[in-house]
Image 1 (cartoon, rainbow, N blue to C red):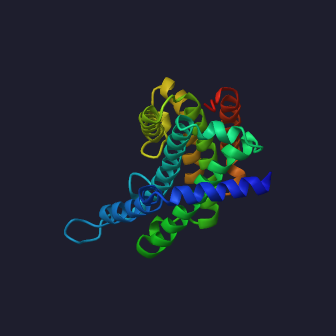
Image 2 (cartoon, rainbow, N blue to C red):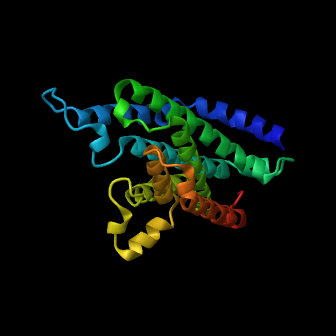
Length: 249
C-alpha cells in the first residue's frame, strides 16, 4: 500500500509541476505576498520606519500560512473535478489501488508543496522580516501542516459535492474566501454574531488559526489539546462524509 501511495504521489507531483502557473501560485506568490506586504506595512511611504510587524493588526506570517493552506484546498477541489470529468478517477478506481491510496496521494502532494512554501516563507522572513517569524519555526510548520490536513479533509467534502470543473472553481473560491474571513486572522471570532460564531467554529480554518497563533507566540502544545482535538474531530467528520458521498464518475 505504501509503495503504491508513494509511487502515485510522485506521478501526481510530476503532473502538477508541469503546470508552471500552479507551481508559481503554490510556492512563489504566497512568499512574495508575505515579503512585500510585510515590508509595505512595516515602513512608511517616505522610507521611515513604521510600526513593527509584530504589532500589526493581523499576523502576516499566519495569514500567509493560511493562504497557502487554502490554495492547496482550491487546487485539490479543482483537480478532483477535472479528473472526474475526464474519467481519470473512474479508471483509477478500476485499478488494484485502494481509494485511500488514490486520494491519499493528492493529500501527500498538497502537504509536500505546503511544506516547501512554508520553508521558503520562513527563510525569506528570517532575512527581511525577522520580527515576523515564530518563536519556533519547526513547531509552527508542524501546526500549519496539522491545520492543512484538516482543511484538506474539508476540501474533499467540497470535491464530493461539485458536478463540474467550472463549478468547482466557483465553489472553491467562494468557500475559501468565507473560511478566510471567519478564521479569526483579521479579528476575534467572539466579535461575530452567535450564529456566525457557530459557523466559524465548525470550520477547520478557525481552529487552525488558533493553533498557529498559539505556537507562533511560543505556547507549548499541551495547552492546545482542545484545539488539536477540534481539528481531529472535523477531519474525522469530513472524511466520513466524503467516504459516503464521494463520486468517482
